Length: 267
Image 1 (cartoon, rainbow, N blue to C red):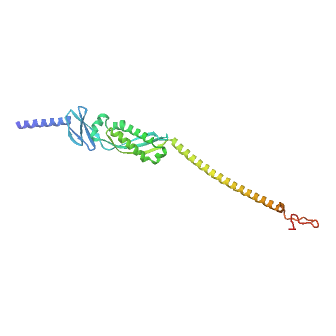
Image 2: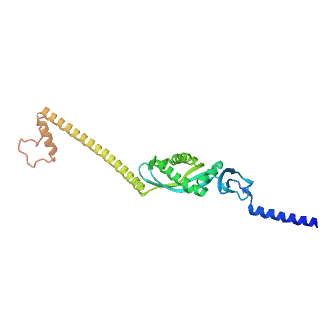
Image 3: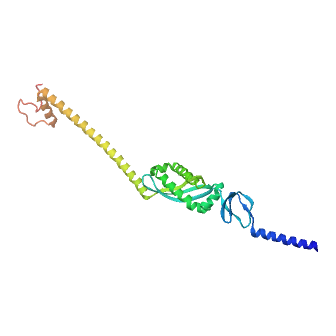
């Protein structure tokens, strides 16, 4: 009987231990990619535990698991370019929480969801506004990578102060408002008008040059004619003009001993 009593006592003790373990739960498993913030009576402690199985003080201690894997966060942004045009876009940020500082992150901010809403999103909005103000709308079409790098550097400085590491930043897309499209259209129209004006100017110059050349030629011709008249005393020139106007017909009656009109046969 003593042996049976001992077995019964042992079985009861074992059951009690199992129940106590299940109820008190002094063990915790931290999964890969996580850190555990140890809490003493609900207060954040300086102890941070890594992945694996850990034993806690029953009732007194608990663990808050924090994801430290790289997380992708996307948000819509709006800002003004350097030439005061509204630009909207979508940014994608890859980041992770610094593992050895998760206790302070959780104590001062909260878990990942709260971190995104209260820290990361406002920082991305501000970085986008600052970077956009450094570029004109025309520059942004060709310098998208430069703008992304500008924002990444800004965010790295801002978020590192809150124990958040920036892994990568990309501009998923961006677009300009109707004002920009209208401005581009007006610029194209202005360029076309300027080109037309330049062509008209060159045409006018060419026509003016032709007119000058024509006037100079006429003036030269008149001068030559005047010199010819002066040298011949005017007689030969008058006869030449009369011949130019003669239609080649001779008069039907001739005065005896008369000569053919306009022809000086004595020469």
